[in-house]
Each structure stands twice: as structure tokens, then as C-alpha cells.
Image (cartoon, rainbow, N blue to C red; front, top):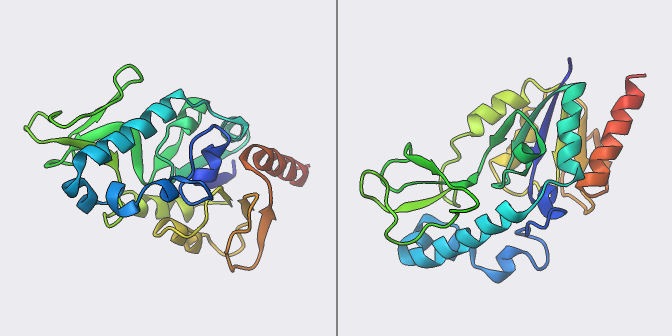
Length: 231
């Protein structure tokens, strides 16, 4: 069974109503990265950061997987599918995908500020954290999110997964955020690469198959292409 490795970004969940970050009207036009997505921002104004992620978490819990998420899940019938996502929602899992690696953390989880191994899972009925909410060691809880300037603990595991790909797919990411964008360098020579995005993506690498569509239509077209190749 061939192994398809999929790298997904914000465009994967845009059709589900999850706000993107870099697009026109995206979250980074409304909020400063330095204020809500850095350790320094959390130190300066933890209330602002907690409120920001409480809102993101509520939106993620209310969203539903789109046809793109479902299409990737259905591909597991014919392929081994590994998803490496930059997204912090759980829409891949809720669609039924069974092998998902989160590079940048997960909105549904929070962790201790003194012991990163102390991680707690929130529910739709209890999805907010506030100043004064503490871990069992008595420290403030923070979002289980990889902020700018922090290490990406899962990147080495992601590299090893990419190295095993028979087909590599990129969906809905600008390929501007490192180290995630560097995963393309770990695809072995000769492995077909498909990039699904309705916008131009600034990737200068020969041999990439561009599918200029959104996630739902793009995944459907990818499935048709692979089905035709297998005939």
C-alpha cells in the first residue's frame, strides 16, 4: 500500500469557517503576532492571549470538517495516509483520519507553564482557561500552542514521516512558515508532489503538480488523478 504524506495549513480549514492568519482579512490583520503568539506577549498581557485562544478554541469546536477533510479520510481505504498539519484545530481527527501529527500544537489542549509535560484536554462545554487556572504544580495554564520563537517539538518526527512518502501532498499553506515549509526538502527524488491551493504559492521546485483549487475541490481532483493513474 502506497504511503501518502499530506502537509496541511490554514487553507485546509478555511472552508469550515476557521479564520486564516495571513490572508486578507485574516487574524494577523486584526491582532499583532507579537501580542498574542509569542512567549513575550503572554508575559506582557496574559489575559489578552488567553482571551484570543479562548475565542479560537470556541470557533474550532463549533466548526465542522469540510469535504476536503473527509476526502483525505476516505483515501485511507486505498492508501496509508499520514497527515502533518500546521493547524491547531482537530478537524482532521473529527473527519475520521487516524494518523495526524500536529506541528504547532492543539487548541483543545492546555498545559502547565512550568512543566510542558502536564497537558490537559478541554471539552466544548468547558473550553476556556482564565488567569488563575493552574496546573497541579500551581502554575498558570497556557494554550498548548507552539508560539513564534518557540521550538517545534514534532518537527523531527515529521521529517522522518516525509522521508517515507511515496506521494507528497501540500494543501492550503503558504510554505512561508519554517520549519514546516522545509519539510519539502525531505521528499525523496522522484516522489510526486501535489500542491493544492487556489492562490499562487511561491515554491520554486521543479516537478510539482499544481491544483489551483480550494481544499474540497482540490482533494477530489487529486483522488481522481490518483485513481486514473492506478487504472
